[in-house]
Length: 332
Image (cartoon, rainbow, N blue to C red):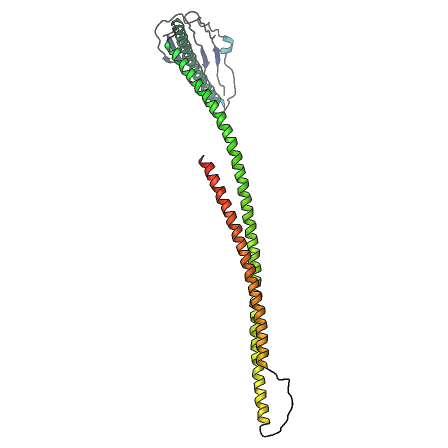
């Protein structure tokens, strides 16, 4: 199976000229293509022209379809004519080619690429035309601004007066800033001193609290000793009472044994056991010891408590005065 295909693509020259009219012309390209026994001609022409301010035109044609732009105003020469296209007739001879299964895809890709190039070229031309218009507009504005005569008015004097006032205000603010900085330095020193005093008072207070805790521990220990002595006193009292009961029982038993015996014995019994006196003496001794311990502990506790109260009062007064001074400085 043979395939007759011929594809020739020629690109024409692209000419762009800009003279006094600021115009340019676009490009055009055409191609031949065919598949099978028939052949066809495909042409893609993109033409645009710019003839200066107020004039522009563009036209795109493909095959039998054509799309044109519009233009008006001062239009001039569209540029150099398109050069003639020469065709090598030897290339028109049929060729025996094998069928390429990808030929259709390749042709589709080529068409898409051509369309993309056409679109990009048209966009480029639009951008160039827009930039030319903007350039012309800016040139016109620049000329108008240069032609305008600038005259000084009293606005400059007003601005100069305003600037002078602002400078004087700036100088006064600078002087005030220097004064405030000196005051700030002085106040910062005072605050630091009061802070140190406050920290010293806090340390003294903590020391007093620690001393109070130690004194309280000693007081609790003395109270526990007192409680222990009271317990011992109660135990001895119970023991003495128990011994007295035993003694009374023995006396009763002995009296029962000797009540029927009458013996007269005369002797000096100087060892009379007076249990009441002994118990009273022991009780008096222990009570004296307990009272002395209690009095000593209470007096020591009271003296320490009074000393702590005096220290706390002194520290409290110092702390109040320090707080008052700090508050006074903060109000200033």
